[in-house]
Image 1: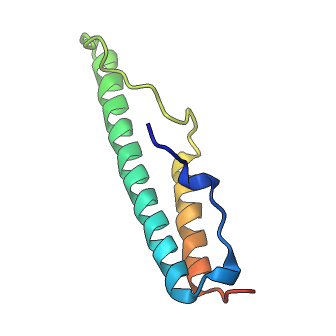
Image 2: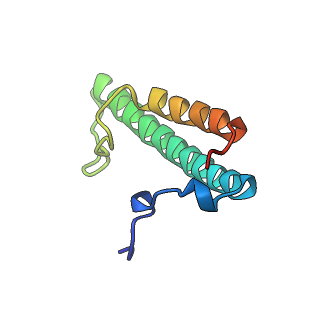
Length: 95
């Protein structure tokens, strides 16, 4: 298990220059891409399970994943976060 949680850290704009901000944005964007791809894989499996059920075929035990968010808004949340990063990338740093 991780020793610390990176979400607990706050960004101190006084110590941050444009290069550091871009590095943080790149890492956040990468994590969002990984999360979105993972979410897509879960959706594929869920769709496959629904197809099996609809055609009265057996669903292998343990195949059905637990939906990580239980919300249909998840893709919209990912898109909103990516858009916010695009806006932040061009925003001026305040001190």
